[in-house]
Image 1: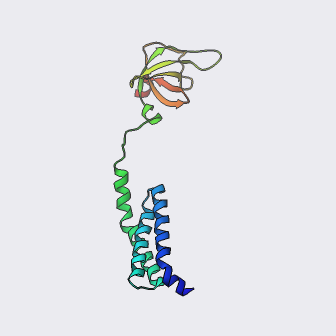
Image 2: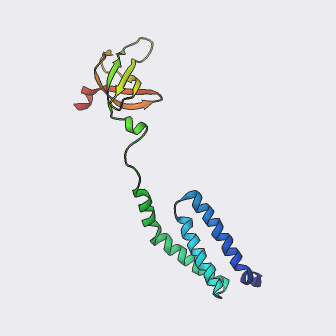
Image 3: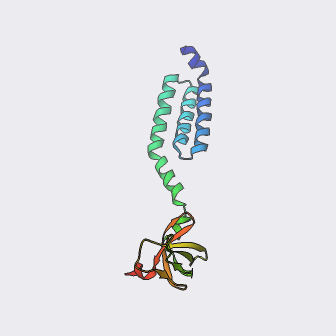
Length: 162
């Protein structure tokens, strides 16, 4: 059995390297990249005549050192390029808008109307909770506080500034 590992250890290392590369391509978090480099170090140790147990130790030491020294800066560099601008629902929260279809108090449900937001989109809107006001007329300024499905939940702009 020891003879098998000695003679064919390079095949084991190549299989491990390929496996780690495939997993790294799928995850892109640099953990398996460090294991690939450690496995290459183990492969080279074996190719230069080192016993299999030494190759395993070298691979483990190189992988652990890389995980703790090289991986953190790589992750920071990867995340630094992200766009901090909010998008989707987060971009709509806090936007001001103008009422284009009055938010009328209805007996059978919430006060629904339409607002045109400052980004140019027109949304169905409803008032957030009872405000003491029965209607918000056309032209009034509102602020988006939440999005529920395809409805913007709004409050009158005056309430948000006080």
